[in-house]
Image (cartoon, rainbow over all chains, first blue to last red; front, side, top):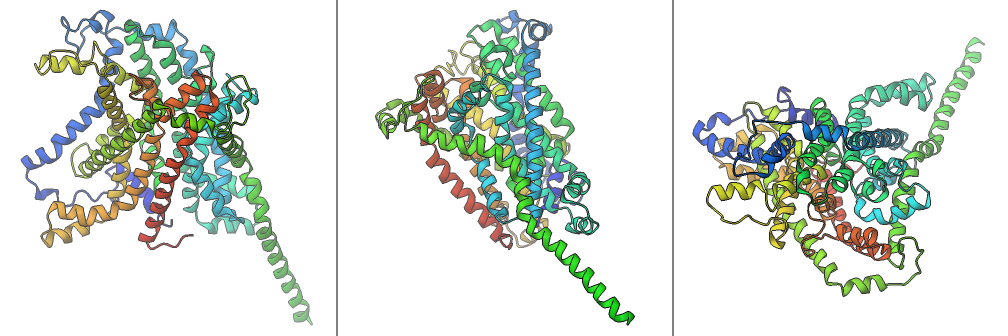
Length: 308
Length: 319
């Protein structure tokens, strides 16, 4: 576990090839001729990237196509449109509950992420630095909690949520999402805390600082990249979450984007495809934008738990 | 005299420091406890307790709105004779096995391709990850539209290429529906596998490849004897996660087929949702969900040994 600092450098290198220490790939590519590289590298790569990105092109195109062109594939080429329309987005934003669903998703995601990170910071610090009796066991248990999937929990949780009187309220999600987020972010933050020199804390202890002061004034400022990673990953997971939101929420106004789109737009009516794709696109955009700004953090968060 | 007076004072200060350190050491357990309270409260109230409750529910005949009675193994006996349940087990195993194997194959291949030196490398790597970031349900809807029975772009393209004469009924035909959901799962999972393995690949020292080249090793030999052994630990962990989350997948199926046609794509998770929440048979649904636990335990064991092996390979102690 001592390899974490180098690990993070390498993870950064995955997406920023400018980092000289991280990238070993320059090596021996000159040994290959250009036509050979074309067949062994560029061709398969472009096929895979095309397949990975095509659904988004298709989503975007459908979202701006007029309905008539959408369903008449003989007169119009399905791959392009010369008359894009924003009617679907207009309908989405002004004639449906979509803004409210977006707000619900945002609200739940921010609250659950915040709660989880507070709990994870405390837990990770205690496991790594306080080294209390049984810290290793608790660390292992938290890792195991990460492996318990929501698919086997949602039925008993539904009864629990009902008993606590939280059914059909955003609070049900805000309180249950942390069980998914805490294990992951604790594990991630443990890795970051280990990279902070212990001597800094010893000095502060000798100067008479309390554990709380050390955590707030020394450890947290140094762990900001880790906190950003944890935040982004937790936020993404919340935004993605489906089964709890599907089970615990009932009224249309309370739903989150993924559940609402599946339930409210899908009624077998073919004329809704435009709105459906517009909704899917608009629901994905916030995450893609967030991701674009924090790519490196995202990747280190994603692989962080695996690396540990 | 001055010396004598000084010495005890010094000793005293040493003792005081020692005791404050001791005190801190003794307090560690209590401090640790208080720091753990928030995380533990969440995990016990909303994870450990429901997990136990779920197993308990599977032994009762609880229905929505009615507290159940303990009925022993009856739910399980019932499931044992239920063809749809066994079909869902078969589907889940097929789905997990095929999707994980292909995800691994393509993910590793993609990681090796992305590890090469080429223009726009950073941008390409960032773009590859997008399917993983977009909410699964929303991308599943895109696939729903791509696989539409009437307006599928795939059917259209194949028809215009003259390869087929009829639209393919992608999500209405049992075999095609299975292929489609597995494809969507692979599409979503490949970026995760690829980027994680790429991170692993970058820790392999290039000097090993240089040495192998000088010794006249072929590309396959280099992969087999350098890349693969060094990647094994991370492969073990990534694939355990991949298997675990594919096995318990719910949202992709629910958004694309809801288990249909004729239950051909029902996984254990979707079947338990259908029986418990839509059908109201909480006890039976809980039994289906609990039936997943042995499989998950198996995967966790593999993950555990994978991690252990990794530590051992790095020559680290188990701290």
